[in-house]
Length: 120
Image (cartoon, rainbow, N blue to C red; front, side):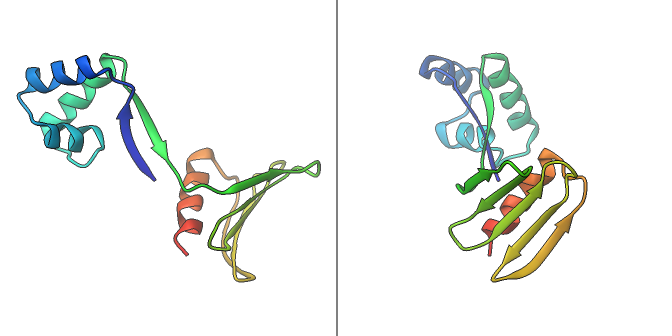
């Protein structure tokens, strides 16, 4: 899962780079969470105050919600995540083998399972 801060105008980006005395490369690393320095943390805080939004990128997959309360995600590599929306139990399958199980799945844990499934 990749994170970045987006939604800033060009003028706001230029203002932040001038204010913090950083070039485009340092600015990009800070806003893409590639740097954890004190300067990068301050830059991200300022970007959020200027209206930037944290965006998360996850692998694309087909998601089907059926009438039986199941959510099934199929990834390009053949991995499948099946989630029972009533119980919150999830199973990751790859090549007809169960690779992981999770009970009481949260949204954050779903993102982790999606990354795991996409990595096969």
